[in-house]
Length: 564
Image (cartoon, rainbow, N blue to C red; front, side, top):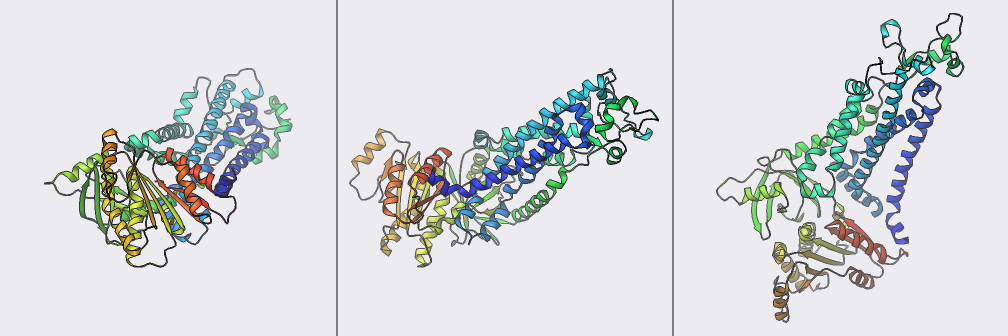
């Protein structure tokens, strides 16, 4: 627990502040509407559900203001660049942008549910008070005229006794926009589940753009002022606490208490979301301009296991290790953009990506490039964008863990190391790299086989054999493969990959690996970088906490995971 606090104290503090603001805004708004004289008569009809609806609405505005900021990728990349000299703790918060985006979305769902349930009670009470004929205060308040030209000042949005709640819902701006926003929110949240995003990315991509209807609906939701309060002038003429009991005498000329007048509250949601929306629009304009710049495909390589490598050039393109880009192929889908990690090094005169067939879009793209007698499809590129992997050279010791195609960001890092050694870069802070590559099939190792071979030779020539310690793990194997490898174990190179490092069968024993690293580097700061599934992330995160020392002068493990 102590190690966890050491590694995550800033995240915990940030979330505590965010949650605290939500609680403060909800309680403050609830007390305001529960005690304010302006809403005394409104409470007589609605009770405490008025305060619940308004308090949740304020929290919805607050979180809707935040929801777009974590997905402003250009802004985050800019902040990452400007924070290059900030502490590691501050920079790492930028890597949790999507996690915070999801938390804000869950909070929006929570307050949406509270808001809807409260208004269901409100409209039921509006309906029952409009049906009342007993001459009570609520029946008098509900029968106030809606005809503003005749001096009427209504409080109940249900004008007639035969008017249904459904009619008011679908004919009022607040009701109609509320239904549209709720449907959009449900579709966005349900399509953003891990299974949908991994298996049907297109569904997630298109439904998530319903946020446009959500934002527009939120901006105009308050127009019409269904929830109304007594005007300031009317309160001065007859305070509700004194005049409520004389409601039967409101129309008498001898009575000091006059019939109260009401007005709707002006819409406020647009004030909350205006600045983030403008920022997001600027972000989209920048990304659109950047994506329209011409991309030249210089080389196409088909690797085993249905993996396509594209090498490209683009004027003004500049990258760092571990960054990613968004790729669009207009001939397949003009609207879909998919993220891919860059596998080239900043020192190379091109940038490259490796694309594995993992869905309709990627399969169609690979099929388009496989057609020999057809023109090469046009590609549009947006980016690059920063990730946690950019900080790899800020650590004395780096542990790189790639699962399958998740090796791509580390290919960029390893290539950059090769170039740094070629140029005798003495500014390299990193002294040791542990690289783990976990694959299901042997063909996957050929994607970057040449790179690992070159690194082996380079390390030997420079006398730095111990700088890179890499391990290859094969999880999809049978007795034939194991038997073949055992018969050829004495050979200088691995029978499966041709490398000097032998392939291991099964998965790494992470406790043993971390224990060895902690023993070998007792006073080092170790950066652990992962590009792989969530289950593996949980195991590595636990190991980082378990093997980090509470003493800041001793070994510390910092976990980093690539998030798109």
